[in-house]
Image 1 (cartoon, rainbow, N blue to C red):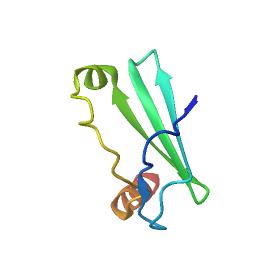
Image 2: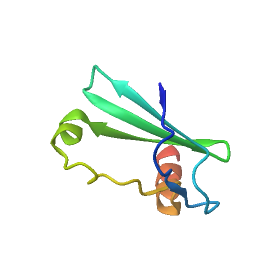
Image 3: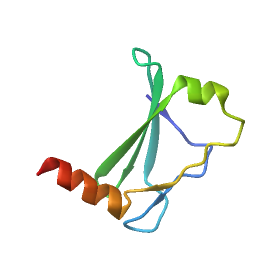
Image 4: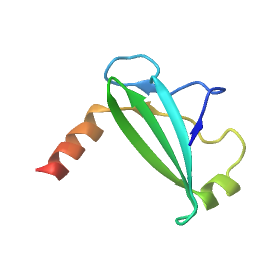
Length: 80
């Protein structure tokens, strides 16, 4: 697990501040990288496949907002 320190952290949609922690973990079996953010005791992850990472133009992938209300509502529906 790699702690990412040299980038601007994504903003948390719930508290309006940068997320508390940001980790990057290689998923070798699935040829991807998992980026996980932590804030207010919760975590959220996104999977980026290696092809996307290798073919991207440097600087073209930007962090969005974490813990968006629509994402949380969707997760709650899936758990019902």
